[in-house]
Length: 525
Image (cartoon, rainbow, N blue to C red):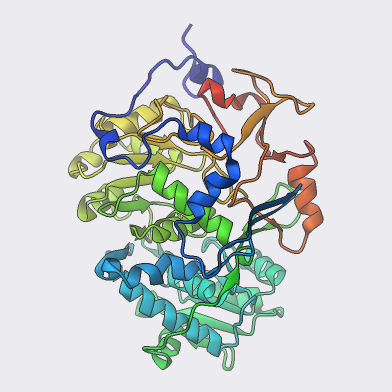
């Protein structure tokens, strides 16, 4: 019986399989299927081994302290996230390697080496200090996809000041709620950001968000659009231009703040189905361990790769897989400011060909849109630099998966479909490209070191091929630690439905067992 495309029945009866391509495993970062067994045998040693790839100022005393639902990873360890993402590369042969390859929607470009990034982050950190930002203070970032955004994020991390990035498409009201909830001391924004040839008035939105009073003491404004934007109002004593502030601290260096592994790195708000947005809190040591390892393993990341995650940094995917995961690995990561259809529907493929992108990580919604637009647009460009493809953000239907594999990857690129959430911080379910036989529409197996299961209403495992609720039975390093300012809500939302298990909120027939090799999972990424 033929089932309609996009139904759960079609996924269950999907018979196409794609083993690792010939020659791919020869250079792959992970080639041994036994890694799953070893992780199950000694979970703490598995994650400790991963964490040792970071530079620690002080080693941890204990890998995991687990008092359900409260986790502490790498207890007693001390490090700095910005140091691990920038300093340790900027003082090696990677000094002149491209860290961020940026293209703006109008076509302007910038390439920042690791040394460039090191200098800019130091200047920005000293500038924030001059505005009174200290360890533990929160900084809100409401910005377009420009290099100053990751620079500001890493400057905050250098100071031990948790940042809260607010997606530039959010309204002044949504911005106000987030600024006030985390009690941000400083807001960093831009005069405007480009969107399909138009301008989003970011500074005006900030002014509206703050007009009824706020804890924010200063607003720092990047001049992005310049003369193209309407003249922005600058409030004396509160507002300052980014370029003026940075010029005051040219050449400045600030030592990275030593922070505990459990020190807050960032707060990212995810909209709940009811009530106010939830401020998901991620900490330093465990989060960076999880994002660094998954970037290296799932995307098979190498030093000569040009890696592009097409997400916006306003979402968790951009935090984990544009900024922290790739930079911790010393990668060259591409940032693009605009949309895939401006000035024409081949913009993504233009960027892939222009920069020789080797790894592309994008959303199924985008892939289905590309399918509708037709092959005319990718066929304008040479996409042979690509060697691995990824998907994120929602389930991908088998036909979109196959189209992506054949027409973008040329039939030679593994497709790693990934499942995770804002709350999980890192990818939890995904193929390992040199180990896993791929099935279109399936994210396949939980990663080594991740204990996922499907349970029924009573919390019992349902077995192969049956629907139920997706849960996580053991802690993982990048997991959220709490909801900012509301620990009771954290317990109620994630740990009360099935005591002792993290409830992902994903349910019903879309949920299939990992052992069946088929996941169709909803996500908040």
